[in-house]
Image (cartoon, rainbow, N blue to C red):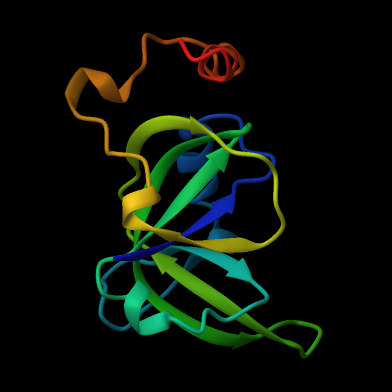
Length: 144
């Protein structure tokens, strides 16, 4: 299965991401769904769209850590306000916490194979001891 990974620039936590995804700029109507869906705006259209729509997710990097994923529901082209072509990645509103993993900054999005993706966290694992993200990142860097 093929996924995408993208930095969540300016986002401080999973709670912050959840709130930002509710803002009108970050939602888009889709005829197959009753409520507007969270959306990511990006310039490049994924050439492997069909593989992504076959169960793929968008993994989010927050403060240098891969922390969550959201299933990809659709990928559409759009015309931006300046007249250029862009891409909308429509996501499930459900944010699924994953096993935190460090990730260096990069631009845009990248493909992520399922075998390289972090595992979903279950139950109490989904809230890793309430540690600040900076401390979680440092512990992961130290291999603890």
